[in-house]
Length: 519
Image (tube, rainbow, N blue to C red; front, side):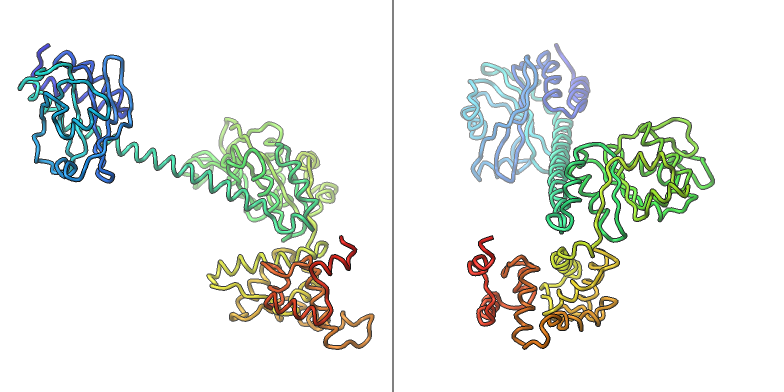
């Protein structure tokens, strides 16, 4: 079949640029070209200047197109020849590929047989990016007319290759970001589940979390303000099959009553004055994940009715809308109030109460788990030091933990965090003291020595020191070295502390275990 340059250019351009799938584009080109030019196979060569290779990225023949990753390394002198865009003609014919210094390497590497090959050099912005080749069995298969036709497709072929490479880079970047996202989510999931006190004061609560997390049951977290209810909710989400989905937090007491329906359930355009566009509510945004309704006792009656429908029907209706919207969510609620009393007083719907209280988890206040205080203090010291960009983590002053252990912490864990932050601000790089930080710190600091001698009458300085070190050891479970160890809490070198303990007659190591009966 004969074809003029305009027709050949149009047909080839339509096929080359008709898809970003290179192997498919190459196959469509082959089906057309073989009727105009002798062809047994089309090959797309891509040059990688960073590693100095010529890659056969795709090939096409009568059977179809295939993606390939065949690389042929070139020595520096041949790379230099390729990279000079106008050193060779844009289209050239090689009658004997094995005599060509570059094509011969490719042919021997890929096991090609003797054939004729015609190559069109692909150049973008003055840079050589590869070649589009056509191969035919035998010798002397290509004429000057074939060369003229092949030269008209150089530009569209170069653009198609460049676009395909950019697309591949974007896809690779997207895959890399998705992989990073999966990794970071997994790391976040691990870190979030590591709750301070999970093996001590919060052990019972965490056992409940592990039991209910894999299920879809609603959970009600009950506890005083500042006990860490949000941390427990986050752990439930991250230990559940929904951990890859969103975790949407809502403080029900912080949303004005006039806006709560719109915030939770969304609204349609024109639903009310100022509704200039459709807006998705928090429940829709939590689709496929978990929604955490903190301070659920603050929900007004009309929002309680809507929430009951979500729990029963698994669907919402936007403000101003008429069509129900299906949502796949898990509801975790939290409160610091007595919901049973609110139900009795008519301030909270009884049917909603029983819907959200399928699996209650009670978080004990800090005064009921004071053994967690040393670990919490160390955790917040490290955390706040990082946030304040401190180069070193300051140690605790002697007696600091004793004072903290005697305080009742009405603000619970949140008060510990605030106290540590204030102490860091006031420390000026010195060991952390909590004088003037806690509401009753002065009196607690004064009570430390009197507590030591309540049953002993007067005591010597060595006895007070021994008692103080023994208390710190009990608080650290007998651990002397490492983060949170007795040496760190006392701002002492571990070797110095051991020497002092020997002098004071305080057993440690094997002696300590022997004294405790080998426990």
